[in-house]
Image (cartoon, rainbow, N blue to C red; front, side):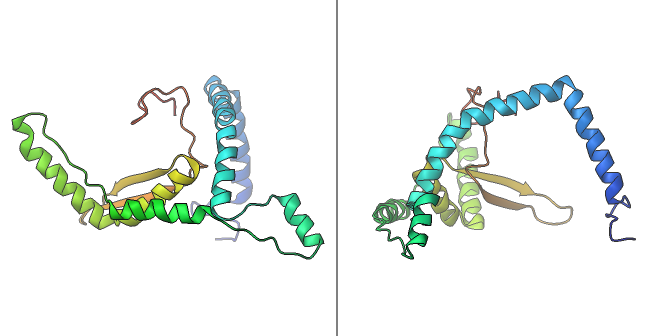
Amino acid sequence: MSENTDDWGTDDATVGVGYVNALYQLNESNFANDLISHHRFVREYHDPFNTNREVNHNFVRGLHYDGDELKKYRDKRKTPVVFNQVKTSERTILGLWLQNAYAIKFSASSPADDDISEILEQLNIWEAEQQGDDMNDIELIRQAWAGGNSFQECFMEVKKGKEPLMHTYMQNPFAVYWDPESRDLIRRRDASF
């Protein structure tokens, strides 16, 4: 196998031609045009929020100067000083979160649901212990506090002959673009993507 060959036995030149042809076909379809225009609409909708969110995240991280200001400091051979008083608020918020840990309760909607609500509550406790949710939740709260939103992805990995594993990953809040026309705020079932 040559250096320019991937695992499927195709070389880079073939992949490049195939990619260009696929991209051409995608651009020529009506579905793709709808997708591309909708993507532009969503990006334009989210860009102002992300710009403000970036300023907030940078401020919390102690990055209070923009590129021009930092260049002026470098030209003068000086180091910018930051008195980040926001850190005390961040520690207070996270400390309150840890001390006042919330407990999720599953209430039965009828007497017949008592057993299932107890099972769900125990499942939630098991999942939180397995995943280390207390640490994931701290980062979730930090991102939500700094930028106004945060996202976690939870999913099960199921392999034949092995116990299922649950995974929880923090998502980059700047990389999640939900459909602004969606009105189902929790599950986004009416979203176009």
